Length: 436
Ligand SMILES: *Cc1c(COP(=O)(O)O)cnc(C)c1O
Image (cartoon, rainbow, N blue to C red; front, top):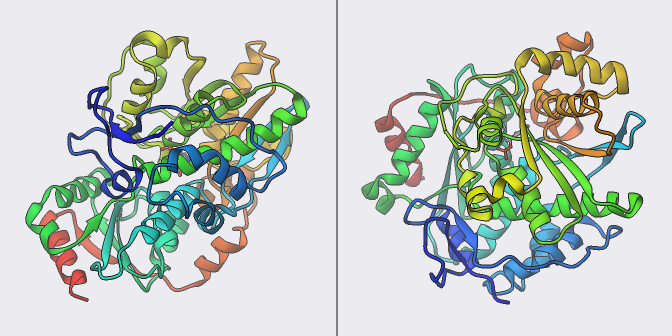
């Protein structure tokens, strides 16, 4: 079977484009998201093999027809050799799959590093330097900056809302230097995102500066995220002899969609529950069988403050019509007060220190237990709690030391340039850095 990629908004007889074209393009020209023209059935992965080997086996059918097919094993070694520990919690066989042991301490490192490796491999020798332009509410910007830092032929321009990311997140964003340009915008995350969208829609600007996106709708981020679920669930299924039920902290649906894809390709995954914060769009979708995107609300789990997840379009493609509601997927909403209470309870009950996002998944697990569910669950832990020290430390009454990679960044000097929430200023900066 040869897999190509077409838009979620395209028609079923569209022959599609090759993977590397979809990776470079990001969004499809009709505004849809790229999806594979077929879903492969992927045989059992070796739970003993390192993640990079599992990844190269699992991704092989998706890459077979592309320019990157031969490079795939090397890309996986280069980008995905990160630790993937599973930690037992409680006595019911539940586990946490920790996805935050990469250089910037959030799961987004896997996707950002893999995308950078792919774009680096696809770069032609005489191409102008490409600017990766990102708006971030915290974690994405750091992961993308870390992945492209000092990568020849690329520079990164980050916009983040001044005063609205944690102190450690802000320090981290400004600490890379070299080819990473960091701007603190006097405005909200939505302002940052609007300015970035305007830049991508500005044809004159795009003729002068080569700009690319690295946001979470990119296939180059989605596909590698599937591999840690393939590996973690294969390991657990080998121990228990049964499919693994997953609870996944969810915002823009990138991480959860990767798990759903693994299951759709035959991976040993059972039920999937999405843990949302007070942004209720997904819980409402499953309760009312109707999708209604809305504006986002600010919560303690700020990386999940999404009111209208862009990856929903891929979920609707995978499960057309009412089939989504028979797909063993559910979603639950967790309010800030419950996040706080759960961070304390998880520490008291299991000695587990969770970030506010992971706490949403822990709260969903506690509810399932209260309802009498006795099956074992695996929870995705999406960020290291030390990244959200201002929330976690007061609740636990103790400091949460950063892991070594994060500590190294925090020890470096950090600087971010001020920017107004004004597109013309961004445009000027893009033109100025393109000349350097
Ligand atoms: C980005 C992020 C999420 C949400 O992931 P999605 O793929 O957008 O659903 C959850 N937790 C943390 C820590 C994140 O950085």
